[in-house]
Length: 480
Image 1 (cartoon, rainbow, N blue to C red):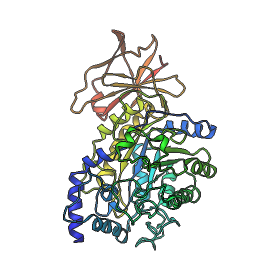
Image 2: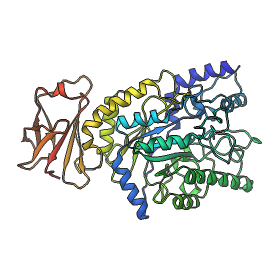
Image 3: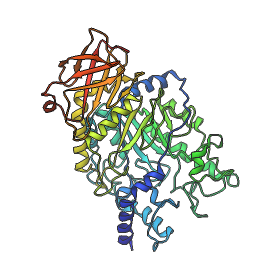
């Protein structure tokens, strides 16, 4: 029975993962509120310099290789084998905690791979919606530190992940799911679990909900107090929110008013967290207000430039966690997305999933290294930049240095494209005397004005010297 469930799950969630991604994504908030705390504003400005981060999804779902914990959620977009009862499926899934033993756990490998790609910040999944903690929580026995991995010196997984990435100079973010499907205070076994929400009436059972609030507060407190310096608290599960912040998107997730106000007292959590971690960035996803310090559109890029902080969180493959034989995006596609996102004022948070043994798939390491071949040479046009008014023309995107003294142009080369002798764009016309140089080698290039824009001559040898992904140019002095 167990093997049959695993095989069917792999089939369903391997072939059907795109549908799940479409229905499980968080979209973008429509309102942004700037922080007022000077320390938060300073850290936010520092985070906006980084531009490129890694989000790591790793948990029970890695054992059979299925997408995150969504398979135990009973919603109509979730596919499961019809011959296995829902209760039996959940028992099997919870039972994976007795099998998860990542004896090759190698966070140093992850951090080095991220650094090689040019990534600057980390968001690590300390607990997904299934409630399985990837840290040594005292609030539950359902954690990596309580199962077969308990005797390993690195059983407190989050500690070693954070330490490894700090040593590589990363900003550190802790992902934490506000809902907890394993907790009796959220999914009470007295009732069925019809969807992602809590399955009992909060108004009729205030004690139980208060216990859940205490549980969430205490777990976040553990992360804020026991794991060194934390820069970002990245809170997932945007359907857990006060009633006054419910919007149409939330209602589409299956919210049932009036029992739906899943308020976990974010002001109390924020006060505690920032006392422990001054200047902490809080990212209460899609819950607009003072605890969503930057927005997080998922698996998409906003249509237009935005002048407030945001990041697009996207997967390198087809799923957030490890899935066997996943198809990973080419390095060129990732770089092009990074360029567009940065030109529009955002950051790219790229998702990868380690294998159940605790190592990265070789293809992931190769892809990250390939991305790094471009960022290591052309990063001047990406990191520590800010938006320009005229940010896009054809295949070319524009950024500027933080001090506004230097303009950058990045020409994205289409797959299979043979580089022309010259490229052109409209807008961002340099003044006379401005030099334009190729960032990859510092070589100055000839340019001329043309129809309110510029035509830039490219040397014949360029195609042999460049990676073939994108060309980045520096204007000095800038004209803005």
